[in-house]
Each structure stands twice: as structure tokens, then as C-alpha cells.
Image (cartoon, rainbow, N blue to C red; front, side, top):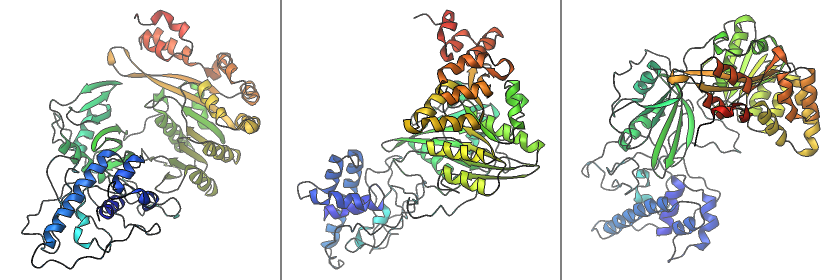
Length: 536
């Protein structure tokens, strides 16, 4: 009986699948239950097993007590193993702790149970209104009170997308920023505070104060630390801002965009250590900027004049790649009548197109994959495609086909230099197809921007250092031949159509914007900045 209970708790809470239960069912016995078998197989963690076992023991104790009562319910028939073809109904739960009901309020025939030791936000017990499928032999166990939360999962092969397609804009009456941050400060207020002081990131960790990032440097934004209950409150508030109705799942990491009325939009990343969450929030700007304020090399501004082709925008994380891409597209929209379509993972800032049309699509919300989004954009007659960001060879090949079809494509990719970017892209291609791929890239690639945001002296902000090139015939020939290592030297000879990262860093140092050590950290040729190397 214990094996049956453990199996149903795990399946109903989507910790494991029915297929996994059936795969390991034959290894369980009276001496080793199914939970222990799954732990040994690496399917679940020992911590998860301990919590589920505590809940099952609670069920057994209450079932035994009910069986000894004078008017107990008839004994349930022996439960059968979970059939592989049967799918458990998805549980529906909310992050906030529901009010605890007293024993007098609960119906006698269905006593409320709590899962002991499985409350991720403290020691307080609470009931839940999780809806579950009726299972023969387990009707009296009140499985609906399991406190592990689940999300509505779209199966990869069911051909369906989430029901909600609207994107939360974050518009509304502005939330007033508090003077100081306290443990009970709400998530919208935290975002308002960050915007007021131009902070780009917010970090919420249990038993630590709130930390924010401003001009690339961290600072402590609150005096008192946050406990787990406050982290729970922030997650609860965030759940109202997910466009796809995502429900937070204990132990399941995620990164999604949220839009909260009056607080704007932000990118939230949650990482779990067991049942303890840590939250990182990237604040998404609410207003666009002009192309002049990007301070790109002058020839990069000419990319907005292109009618077709591929422009890659790369750099390390948090270097403003998406901002550069959207500013280029909005500059085009302000001067030409175009139809812009985006394919994003996920949608961050809501864009405007005053002289044409714009459609923003999110992978997983509006389209199944990046390639599907690009194909749909081409089929619907897009003039400009924004893709954020390229992760697979199939996506890159699809973008090349789109540019070859006459679409202007801006795409965000990973790479700290032009050499590393192109070398990585070429390495993803099978050797037998590399030559033809290089020819396609050389024909369609019109420009590359690799940007780094470098802290200004005395933490007065950040300045942009750029490696960029406008592809010319000589540069395209090098790419076509696969001679990527020679491109850095060739960029230096491009005069007004190229700039190396080292040249850009050198100008920043000579202008007094950045310390020499910052240039040494990021340079392609560290010998050029050896004089700034910190002493050991």
C-alpha cells in the first residue's frame, strides 16, 4: 500500500511521470519502496523522497485511525499499479499560503491533511485546494492537500500551445517607489525603487538583504534580511505577471518575463536549492532610446539602411545586445513603412512601430520553436525580423534563408569577439557541410556588432566598447574561405568600416572613461594592455 501512495503522490505532483514509475516498479519490494528505488536510480532526490514519505506516513496514520473508528468508511479495493497510458490531471495550485482551516470546519468524511516537512516557506502547515483525479483505492487520502505546486505542462507531441496569448505590458498607474526597502516591500515597489535609482538588477536571497546592481556594481539596498516567507510573497506577486499563466513549481528552475501593472516589465530567474528559492530580476527599460545614444561606430548606424541581409549582435550577458537590436529596428520603423516581426525567448520590451505594423511572438507562448517563428514571419510578409537569440544551427540556417528571401534580419548571438562568434558558429556545422555554410554566411552576412559594457571610473556608469565590422568583399572572401583567424587583422584595415575591440578599449582608456585594468580584462591581445595588469 505504501508503494501505491508514494507513486500517486509523485505522479500527481509531476515529480515523476507514470512511465518512470512503471519502469522501476518491478524493483520495489517490502524492503525497498518505490521511492527508494527512484532515489537510487537518480530520478528523484533524497530530500524529495523524505518529504513524500513523511506525507505518506501521515496518510497511513490517519487511515489506520479511521479504520479503527466505529463508523469507518468501507475498505477500499486494493489499488493497481499506475498504467503507463493514463495521464494524471494537472494539479492547480497557487503560490500564496491558503488559510488554515480548523478541524471543526473540515468535513468529517474528507479530513484535511498537510504534507509534513514539505512546506518550502517555513514550518507553518496549510491546506491546499489542488484538484486531483479520483483514483480507485485512494479516495480517502485527500491527495488534494499536497503542497508541491505544479504547472500546466504542454506535451511536446500534443501540438498545443498555452491558452493565454496576451503579453502583460506592465502599464498602469505608476507604482510609487518607497524611500527605504523593508522585508515587506512588495515586488512592484522593488521594481519602482530600482527604476528610480537606475538599477539594472535585483537579487533576492533567503536570510540576506536585498541587493541591487547599479552601473555594473552591486550595492545593498535594505538593512534587514529576507526570510523564506518574504521570498514566497514575492513569488506569489510575480505569478500574476506571467503571460502564459505559469505556476511556480517548487524545485523547478525557470526564467520568464513578468509584467506588473504600474511597475513595468522585468525578467525573473528563479533557482532552487532543494526547496529554497533564490531570485534574480533584470529590470527591462520602459522607454526606448535613440540610435545616437547607443554611441556605436558611425558605420553601424548604416545597418538601418539595408533592405535585406543578416546583422549579428553579440557580446557577454547584460551587455545590452537586445537593446541595440530593438533600437536599430525602431529607427527603421520611424523612417520607413515596414512590417516588423520579432521572435523572442521570451518577449522583453514592448516595441512600437508608428509607420507600419509590428508583431511580437514568444517561443512557447505564440510559436513552438524559433524556426517556426521565423518561417511564420517570412510567410506573413515581414520586412524586418528580430531574433533573440540564436541557439541552434537550425535557427541560424532559417535566418539565412529569410535574409536570402529579401528580409532584413537582426539576430542576437553569443560571443565576446567577432573571431569567437564566427568560430563557434562554424564549429556547430558538420565538416562535410562547412564549406557550403561558409558560402551562405558570406553571401548574407552584412555586419557584426560585438559589444561590452565597461564600468566607468569611480562607478559613474558604464561605457560601450565595441568590436564591429561592415562586411565588404575582402571580409566576405575570408569568411568564404574559412580564414576566420585573419579577420581581426583585416578589420583593422577596414578604415571607416571596422573597429577592433582592442582599438575601442584603447580609446576608452585614453579618454579617461575606464581604468586600464578593465581594458586588460577584456582585450583580445592582452599584451597590448600588459602595463595595466594588476600586481599579484
